[in-house]
Image 1 (tube, rainbow, N blue to C red):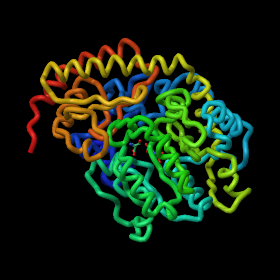
Image 2 (cartoon, rainbow, N blue to C red; image 1 turned 45 degrees about the vertical axis):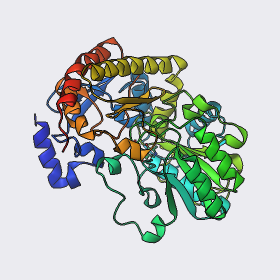
Image 3 (cartoon, helix red, strand yellow; image 1 turned 180 degrees about the vertical axis):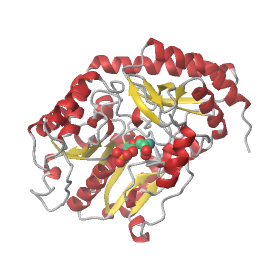
Length: 434
Ligand SMILES: Cc1ncc(COP(=O)(O)O)c(C=O)c1O
Ligand SMILES: N[C@H](C=O)CCC(=O)O
């Protein structure tokens, strides 16, 4: 058996930074990443045989818990019939129908393989539909790693304090305008000045890639109204919130309708049940601008992959109201114990939450935008994180990511988390800033 440290050293000789996605490298918390070999329910097991209670859940997809037996069976069954056909399959339409039944504004759905592809295609569609180039995004929001979206982005870029990425042509970056989140005046000013050039606003339906930052009041509805008043579109990015914060995602919690409904919605993570699958959906007239019906091109060798569709469809079918009650209850237990532990140690904190998604910012008062997220005692997170890991709880290795519960977080894993929190709060309290 190799240790995590040995595996990391070996991986670094073969893979840039030893990882295939930057947030996995533990860059901002320090130490050696756990190399995982198994995951069941609320637990993951590393290469050293260590069992950890998991609050990453593969960054969201594992809503039922890891390796749910019915999902695994559906995947095995699908795999036994062929891994990929590059042709249409009966189950694709079943998955599209399931999403359309759950999420009102989705009249048509196109399957892709990653959230990045979903947002990239939604933007191309918005530009194709409006004949305009400008895209509006929010500071600290993350929509995947396509060129125009790696501007003032959250998630790994926020973790590594990178303002953007090298390799993006200035002309492409110039088509993205960045606005502070929850700032209505900035949006109104921007539309008053350049409204006739704007194709779309893209927004995380609730921000969760700079920690969780809830939309202020009817901010999502306001964005849709403003965009529509200027002939632009709203893309609601539900890659992270979709089928996680509610059975119908953020749309289910806020029920935007009429002029307040987004034109396009992107999905990822839960919709694939842990397999590489994502989607974009929305108004029929817009969606039918996609090839082969319309002039906006999008394609994928593995789009609608039968094994991934089986995982996604089975996961959504199992994601009943009871599952969402369990997720909310698990989040209640953890956020309650987290607040108690930090309060007992006198650590300033704000726990932000949307549905069962939550995170902690080491500051007084819930942040409303990325500047406020950054204005926290982030130096407290690494010792807090490592104290939890030492006690057998795996948190996201970044202060700028959401925590994810699963429906398998029952009494035993919750008990272990609750037990670990006081020592972690002590470690956070003892941390010294630079
Ligand atoms: C809101 C949001 N949009 C888009 C993406 C990109 O998805 P993917 O990593 O599957 O490309 C992510 C996460 O990665 C996300 O959280
Ligand atoms: N915050 C990202 C997705 O939600 C984390 C996943 C990744 O980029 O590896």
